[in-house]
Length: 459
Image 1 (spheres, rainbow, N blue to C red):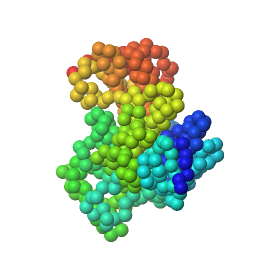
Image 2 (cartoon, helix red, strand yellow):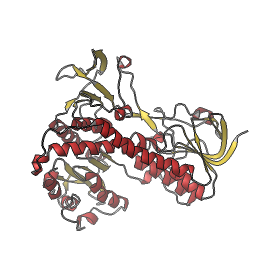
Image 3 (tube, rainbow, N blue to C red):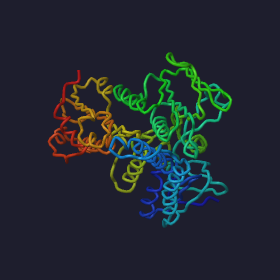
């Protein structure tokens, strides 16, 4: 006989635990099922560990630049990878244990550890236990895509998870994939001391961004000594002694790159393939994402999907917002929707890249009459003073409504400054709201009003 709950949450990522808190406080009896690591991707294999390691890499980079600031450091700067890993592990463990402890001590919440699989739309099995509920909430996350490339079975490769288990420095790291994950790891390990080559099959890095952003990112990475191979159409692998040969077949440069380690950073897929969702009748799209409506309801009444598994964002902040949308609709009589939010994300290379809303390319394709403003970071006093003036900021405005359509900031502090723009977009206020604001000097944000005061028609 099934053990009955009011609500069952599958997955303890960013959305699940917070939803459990709201549901239990409303008087609901909740079961939360987690098969492995509490806290999900962000805490265990995403934001928290990678940004902790990025900080270690930044410290090494700035130590090497000490002379630029009049600071003399005797001897060569070296990196202790065991210490880097230990620091990362300690930060992760604190976060993960905090999430698990919160859930296990939450009144009206029972935690199950194990793999969950649906028997029907109202029942789920966890190991030997059969559980039933009126409502189910999927928060099962995603994992790295491992494409079936020629020779992949003949080599040892790393993904975003195993990459962070290294406590030795790769002699030559070959990163296959030139987007967010690949670039962050590539720059990080270059700063730790590895030779790094980034291999990308398309014509430019971070191809979802505008071409000027891609060009600037490539220039920044190459200035640090990272090799970038674009147009790699025929990627393949084979062992070469103790090394790994990565075939790229690019039109320019050697047809193969020889590395000691290979990182595959070629996208992610949802963890929806072994949940028995077909038994529950839950529909998936062609990529395996759970199909949801604007309020995150699946094709089956009484089942919702939040976070990476629904294909509506794949970021920590969108996952948490998914929780807010579900809770608002179910508990607050507040009809919030996914379509209310603006696309916003950041890439944590150094300097960081932050973007909100539409790209310049998307604005041009829309046919909207638009205005655009740009400022190089070398015109930002704060960036110059810090000795970190690479990159630029760009903003696009609807010429008729005066509302902001989108912005990109590639520069020091850009991941924080972008929120000046994001908040005004959510307020549906005209760009003059920021243009006429008096920002503090010296900051990165103070150049946003200046940039908005010099808008020109997008031709």
